[in-house]
Length: 93
Image (cartoon, rainbow, N blue to C red):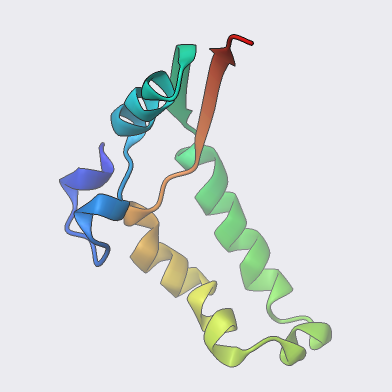
């Protein structure tokens, strides 16, 4: 699934899918540019962790809007538009 498969609240100029990011690395002079998504390994675990963490007493100091943005329902809502990628390339001196 590409980020562009879903409608997004972000302008298209702010969206870099894996292929666009790889092309950007190549254009910046990196060779052997490789990108891959680890979204499936990140967001589910992040949501589970934050669901518990946001209930801790010290989190009451965090802005309620920010806490809401990282709640489990919010992560479920914006998760399809977010990706977590690993990008690797070689830059010659």
